[in-house]
Length: 183
Image 1: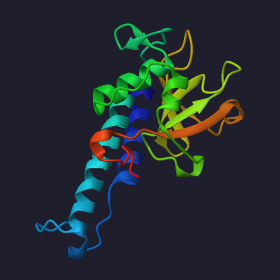
Image 2 (image 1 turned 90 degrees about the horizontal axis):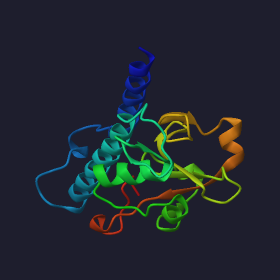
Image 3 (image 1 turned 45 degrees about the horizontal axis):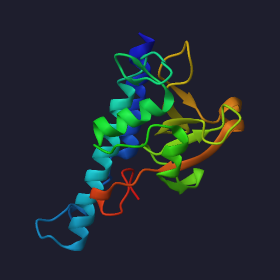
């Protein structure tokens, strides 16, 4: 039962957080293709993509860790999981290794994190040796280590807080310089 409760709670919290708030008719996109209308359409597309990414990742909770793994059938390691989620959901192929993923993405401040951004940790005495996907509310989803499964963890826990290396945002060429996660 707890396996269904956590994803359901996360999805509800994310949907409530990510849903745009429209106050009235002036906030509704109009049929004219004005700048405001285009902004709302881009925003909706970005929110939908980010939501899809996080929802897809949540769907892989419980998949076993496998060093070098990059599919649900064989298991995932941390960077294989992140790469598979972005490729499957957004169609964006990230590099294979965590440090390469860090180098290929835009550095952001921790205070700027949005669902879908990448979070990096020093877990092997080297920078950017572990990666996960930020899901919101200080939590991230990742494939942690041999013997474990894909799971959601709190970044504010002492282990992760001490090892936090930085946050990155994935930019997509088809977004013309706009990020997948809303900037």
